[in-house]
Length: 259
Image (cartoon, rainbow, N blue to C red; front, top):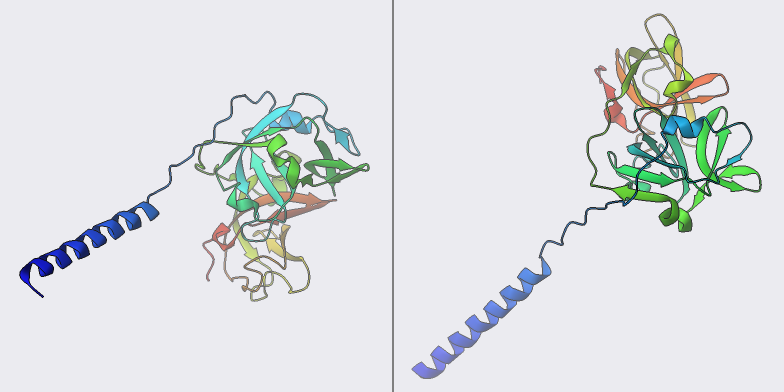
């Protein structure tokens, strides 16, 4: 090969590499960040919304709009087809007929809820926002989400849990993120849940007061062993009839235990 042909070959190779480099760069360009923004305001607090409940299933047929920050979702599997939001006044459990909600409703995400067309109902004394299906409170259909739930801004900080003690629990803290100090598991070493059913385990304070820790058998930490020692427990407060219940989001909600 003469000198001219060698130079031509090198030129073609370098040109091809430059072209390929340009293509690769284009394939990996960072997509623009889309920040969601609503163009309306909330006109009702969550506690005011809950005060509309009078029993049975209550349809909401007025322009009621609430907002709150997501404090729990279905990422760990311990909350099924629901998210929990709260504002400064109260917490709200929203039932949604869709899985993998955590991919959209991340912790700390601000959510506005247009409640017109939704309904309030209760299960075991715990109020829920959902859909009225034949006089029964049910989940909001996935096809209706864009009508009722709206994201605003990017996810931020999750509100600090409210410090509580077992003897002083009240319904004003239902569906809010709360924190108990100086608790211990009454049966350390057992799994958090059995493999075939949602399971109740007991947490006790130093005076023997008990609250139920309720864990789904589909939770990612179902097979983990409950630790020994004394520590703090954060979770979403719930109730079933006269029994107080606590749902943790994952094992990071346990702090200070021996394991």
